[in-house]
Amino acid sequence: MPETILIVEDEPSLQETLAYNLKKQGYIVESAGDGRIALEIGRRLKPDLILLDIMLPGLNGVDVCKTLRREGFNSPIIMLTARDDEIDRVVGLEIGADDYVTKPFSMRELIARVKAQLRRTDSIREELEKLSNRALLENAGQAEPSQDTLKFDDLIVNRTRREVTLNGTALALKPQEYDLLVFFAEHRGQMLSREFVLERVWGWDYIGDSRTVDVHVRWLRQKVEKDPGNPTRIVTVRGGGYRFEG
Ligand code: CA
Image 1 (cartoon, rainbow, N blue to C red):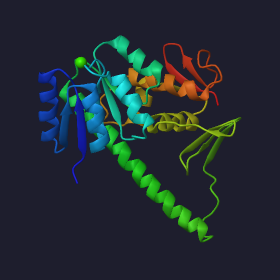
Image 2: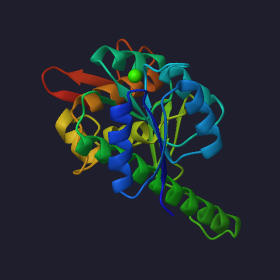
Image 3: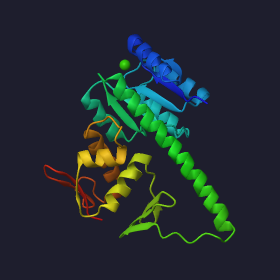
């Protein structure tokens, strides 16, 4: 079953180019050039992924994203940002987007990001299936209790359940945030360069820049640090990258 992508972009030539290239990749594509229409199509179609421009007539992309997330829409959303300073808006507002691409972007880069997001969704589905199988086993009393837990004071990562708790409260982490945290946790005390993190967490075939890592670190800090402005868990190593202190 081909995956469905909703393109929300009010610039007709870009909307067409995106639609053409994504159809060529075998996706089913619907397009909208207006925020309100995007919201309607998003609710009705429940696409597997949304490409969402920020500056739109009707309703802006940030509000479209926030509204859909509030309504429980959980497929990946990639924001299309026109300027670098819009990224800060996207990040700062915690609007629930999974990734962003800054215009102008290459079609190759965009498609790589789309594929990366859809692959992630697939692996979550697989994970959930495994979990439900495990639950069946546990109910039957056959499974070993999980030892796959990483503990850093009040921060506990349960890799079997892909669950992170802070002070006993479950954190709502996006897949990349979770993967990043586990990667950090597995390399506690080591200096990790942005490039290394990008390669290992996002994968060889991920075409992004190291700013992607910075953005996700900022998101993660907001969730796991007591004072995100003065992080003590995920510290920045001057001129190098990051180090997870636990
Ligand atoms: Ca626009």
